[in-house]
Image 1 (cartoon, rainbow, N blue to C red):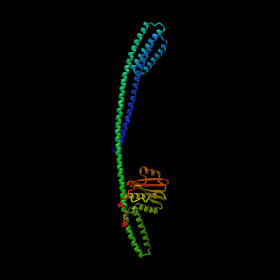
Image 2 (cartoon, rainbow, N blue to C red; image 1 turned 90 degrees about the vertical axis):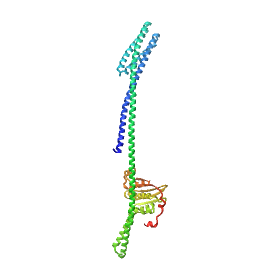
Image 3 (cartoon, rainbow, N blue to C red; image 1 turned 120 degrees about the vertical axis):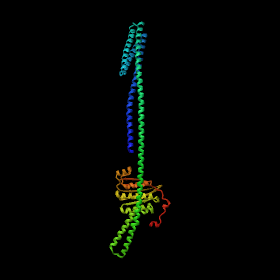
Image 4 (cartoon, helix red, strand yellow; image 1 turned 30 degrees about the vertical axis):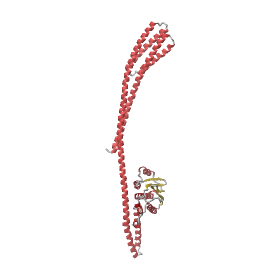
Length: 445
């Protein structure tokens, strides 16, 4: 499997683990929520049992107080407490409706409660009628005590059953919490491992791509250097071989012309030879201008701009800062090629009648600007050029690679009023040996 396939597989597996862990966590949390609900329900039942015990005990105390004092004000309080006992019993019946055993116990509790309320009412009525005696009240009290004992036994069984349910449900709650913790920990750990693997694979891909881009740039730079070497070789061959042969031929025809001064064919041949020699010299200089090696970038730029203006009919305003001194050979060559390509693009694509060229030095940098006053680049081409470095042709890619190779930067600004190419390159001064001006013999060569 390829590196890209492995990265995608690791990412897919990590996402699957996250999905499964999320689903498992959802189910576990649902179970946890349900279990917590049952635990709260059990505690509510226990609370209702405690509330029932308190209200029944309070009802018994009020009965005893009324029998002893006969205070009528106690009757209203007694009726209120009896009502609370019944309400609490109703709530208890509702809470235990899901448990058959507890529901049966609650029904028995309701019967005992009604018996107790009836006995309390009989004791109160006996007191109100004035027929209350110690013997009669004692008999009523014994019946109430027996009923209370049965009620307490039943409530204790109900409370014990709820304690067992509470213990079971709390155990489930603890198990659910542990299961959730284990599921989330394992899933997240596995997902984290897969994400780390995915990250490592992506890093390897990026590194491999960076190495490929570096190798491609090195190859592009090497090809440009080879191209420059070949251009210099061809220029020298044109100058030293073809140029010399044409010059010798011109000398021979000039001798013939002296013998036949009125021969029109010889005059036409001389004119053709002059044009051929001039064209050969122009091609040779365009391939690699000797001024670039002999006099430097400033002279080469002036020569090229002047020739370009004459050939294209485009007026070019050239401005060169006096502070621009001799630069390293590779920097001068790169800037000159940028000037060539930029003005060629102005002639081919801009439709401009005027252009500006400037070369300035500031600190450790030299800046070249080539600006035309044409119709500018299409928006799509300019966007692709800025975002991806493509879309403007091979020439622009070559300029970019040349400037990057010497450690500079190239920027393009374009709108409806024209296009400007700005190049900033390091202005390292040429070594003293390279700055020595050529001798006259070397210039003649």
